[in-house]
Image (cartoon, rainbow, N blue to C red):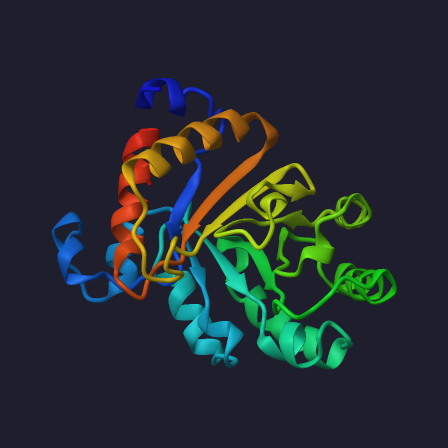
Length: 254
């Protein structure tokens, strides 16, 4: 598949490709223009990134505003939900945790992309609690949501139906906890690949063969709606190089 064939399948929008965070490793610095800050430089090459620091702590209003105003109009941030929601309370929470987080991300305005809920590997699927949480979320938020479950019990037809009901997309992750976790699921209008590095999570760089396959898969899925691919193999600095390589294979522009 050549890049012209790939990008021709994306009608009306470009696939969103980026990394978790916008740190620019020294080995990749030559791809970027000079500038005052990493985010501004990053956003001149990529059209998306994932904010992970929100998982660990809330941010000041001024921080969200600075991020929003540092990127061009076509740029989008995916934002990872706080661990207090996904890990500490294991989704058994109410507006006391959801409302402050949703107020923060709303500061991004039209630069806000999907909210990512990454569940702990130990959290099993319980239909009642999952439905209760998703209903509470949708009472307060109507935007895009992606869901990264990491326990095998979440990969069943019942779960897929529930996520579709609440218009939530299941992340396609690598490495997957079970084979089905490598495939998109749930709400079909949003596809979100989250690539952590394999075989060594967060460190391993992806091979040319893997990136070729990813480009072909993204192109094939383009007709279904938005398509995202976020590289999370940042510990070794591989994420930026892999994102650039995938972007080139798809022939995309930021």
